[in-house]
Image (spheres, chains in turn orange, blue):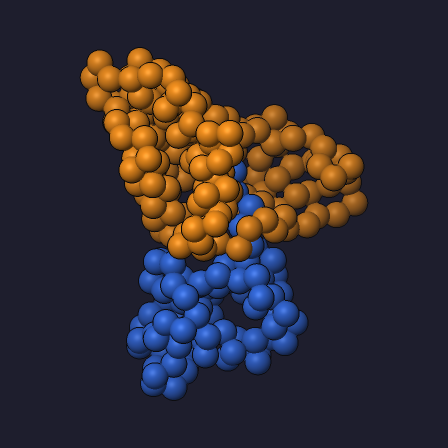
Length: 162
Length: 81
């Protein structure tokens, strides 16, 4: 069964389904390379043992954010097909929270677009994680989400191509 | 006019609910909606500096005007991925 190109789900992530979707988007015979990023729950953060993470999203805006990011990647790496699937809810250590696949004719664009997309997701997607550790829990706060911030976009691009 | 306010993550914990409906005067902006919320929940007021916002599930700046029936979301710093 096919999944949406950009999606949020409470179910475990199927890496192969995301890869297939990105390949479809790149087009038949035009996915000689697929770059894949999988984000997993780490067992340790800031010196604390992590028990689990709780992810939540403002779903309609998160899907808009993924579309903005995929369009940015498409403008910088024409012909690249990008698929993103983020998991929400309660995740245990080792569970995948996000899978990104970028399919293109050649590998430089696949690697670069994939890296760009994860950097941008971390910068602007309205998704939050609460870290539960021994003896407590805490919302993790990263970036102030602003898709029009050119400096942030440049940072993501430099990380992708650096 | 009547505005639905959505808050998330740590900000929701401070407010104590994910969704509120409040009346604001005609001509209000996103900033005015925030001022109404922060007035009611003073513990949330210091969050303002790092917040971003959305109107009807589209990113919006704080000077953006709001209309009756709009859904205004306040987003603390994000941590997806």
